[in-house]
Every structure is written in structure tokens, then in C-alpha cells.
Length: 226
Image (cartoon, rainbow, N blue to C red; front, side, top):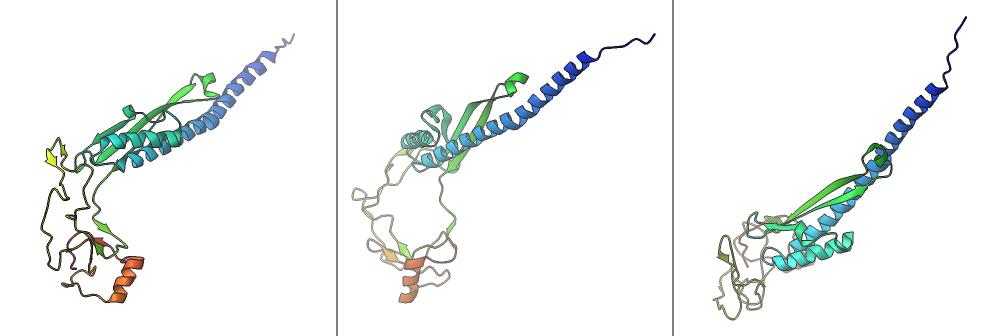
């Protein structure tokens, strides 16, 4: 006699296996996409926070912290960036660098079926304030740093380390303005932006063009004749 075997149970098992595979694929597509979106949103928040805080550096870390948390709220919601997420450090000068790091939980839709319900995404951004080595489209106008109207908000403040005091300008710290070709014996001075030309002689039309449009070449730091 031929013995017949029922195969209904095998179909059920195959369907269950296929269902798990489909859920895994859905989790990969939907949940991973959701986690990536959360990470990008968090990255945008810390980017905005770091750039905002850098505006108050290198000296004023109090304002830098306030701006960093404020812009974090504007770009990520209240509490998006807190003071514990923000640190200050030295790259070239005291407190010239701000770093913002944020870790955030991101939930899933299908991943919980496979035991991965929540993951933690990380984002960080660093901004540094420094003196540029060269600039383009510069206007031919110089202001002497010893002018009485110039006084930094951290005038006289000593940073530790390296215990170097910020320079002070203004009426309480009188200086003698140089009257030579490289001096600015007034509120401002017009300068010759052509390197290697050892005098301040430049045509009025050329100066007017520089004032309106800027100098169309990169200029390194250094002395220029007035």
C-alpha cells in the first residue's frame, strides 16, 4: 500500500519564514531610512549650534554657550542642545574652538519585531575662529587698530592658560599714530593693494573700482602702503 503524507504544515512553516524575511526587509528599508533621517536632522542642529556659538569666540564663552543653545532650539526644538553638549578648547588661541556633540534615540517601526526597537544616533560639529591667511575682494580701506573707537569686549581680560592678556585700545590707552606711508593718521586710510608697489600711488578710477567691487585677487596678510 502507498502511504500518503499530508504537507499542509510545511506550507505554514514556509509562510512564517517568508513573513520574517519580509519584515526584515521592511525593517531595513523603513527603519534604517528613519534612523538616517534622524541623524541628518540632529547633524543639522549641531552644525547650526556650533556656527552660532563660534561668533562669540575666542573670548566670550558665556555668550557662545547662550547662542549655541539658542540656535540649537531654533533648529531642533527646545532642549535640542544643552550646555552639557557644548565644550570649548584651544586650537591656536585660548577658547577659539567650540565642539557640539549630541546623541539622540531613534525609534523604528518593524525593527522591534526583530529585537531592534530603538537605536542611538550621534552627531558632532566643530567650529573654530581664526585669522584668515588671505582674502579676496578686499576694499582698499584700512582702520588703525589704535583708533579710540576700537575696544574689544574682552579688553584686558587674561586667559588661562596661557595667561596672555587681550590688548586694550581706546582713550585709556593712548598711543601715537604713525604718520608714515604705512600709517593711518586718522579714522581711516586708503591703501594700495598691489603687492610689490612700494608707494601708495594708485589712480582714482582704480581706487573707485576697488571700493565698489573689491580687489579681484587673493591678498595675503602683510603690510600695504597708504
